[in-house]
View 1 (cartoon, rainbow over the protein chains, first blue to last red):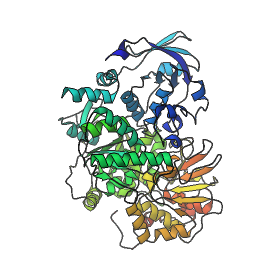
View 2 (view 1 turned 90 degrees about the horizontal axis):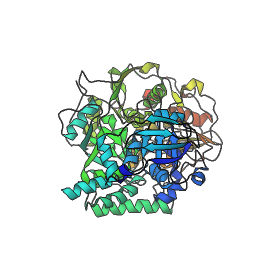
View 3 (view 1 turned 45 degrees about the horizontal axis):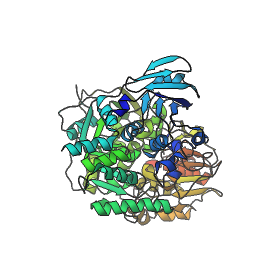
Length: 172
Length: 439
């Protein structure tokens, strides 16, 4: 089950945003009358960066400041980001419901204030989730990220919260 | 080391003698809530768990309120999916349009959340129920799915910030002004991952409706939950909504707080949060004169009966400014009926405002009052992010029902004291029949 652990480090291009990126700009409520990830991805970040859906490529990274994902609990926000092809969100800090949702649906996230502050749009980053390291290949720097507690790692290793519960139900 | 009030409830529901901030625990859920936006995703995930039934038919609540009454075909499909799931699972607390209302006004009114309980909801404003001394927090749809299947939720035990309230609110200042004032002080991530625990002699002077408003907006400071101690007003409220037994918890004397913030309630002015963050709070004196296109009064934050009384007391016998739309949304059908009985609806409609069915509607730019490009609204809701109520080029100012009503009359942001009796705020919240009320 630990495919994500063994996988090669994530390497991608940064899309850079500021502090307090809220879930209303990640996926505006006018699109919440459906929940298909691909449909949501078409409007991802629309009210903050209308060009995002066009310019984002598979394996790209979102890099942002403090309190990323604040506001509404809508899981549509991490779903939209994941379906956009974004491989990981690196931020100085995350709002707590977004943080849970990302772990629960299997969107990789990393809290690394130094790397998040330093990175600029277009920088090439390499992330080692298992070791908790962020290397900025463009700038030639490396920073340590906050490691995940073992319980959260076990959810991530299962592939998300539902898979985690299915395994537990199956064992009962 | 002692525990905070939130930590005690989590420990009890996790079956542990004690917990500490940072512990990861699995806790039993007394009520799990979803709405027409979050439940469809949760239902999809619930099916994937392999569970054939929800853990307890009486401990799941499903409320169509965001895009209900159905605003379009896609929304109708979402409401239908939730309704069919509720029927299939025999969920007792599914509320249809007509008996329902906005979830966070509805659940307390129905006695579905009581002191000491642990509540999760796939809606960020689930933190509202901390008003009654419950631990309640917003989660995502997958968390709701897992809770519906297992009856439990994983939680990181939060550290806490203590807000010690002293004195009494004066003039037209209300619970809404207090929470905007506090968010202005600490910022939109000022309580990130933490509990906001309210305490002190000033709590007694806050009505239950005001406590709901305050706890509702804990999430706007990034908090996991906001919580009030259980006092005489809480017990009297609980007895009025439910005959169920409940447990009272209080923080230990040696509970650890990361910080303590002292607030003198008498010094809290009517407060307005400027675009585009709830933390951009300024006293009314610095906001007056900003021209408005729309005023919204209602929502899970300020759609309760006291909010409508205060608004109606200002609108009564006056006219909404020409060219401005004023929209009023009661929180539930019961509140709607009470407003009718007290003559509030007549005051509101008579002033030229719209009185709508209960819905989250315009608060999240859903329906029933969307803003065009360049338009500016003042709203009693909880968020003023970019595009929150419509076009990404529109603006939202957040304020209390009193400021909202006064501004609707003036056509621009206005201090209620300039229009109505400067000392009249607390009196205006009391029932119209003159019997006074439990404050």
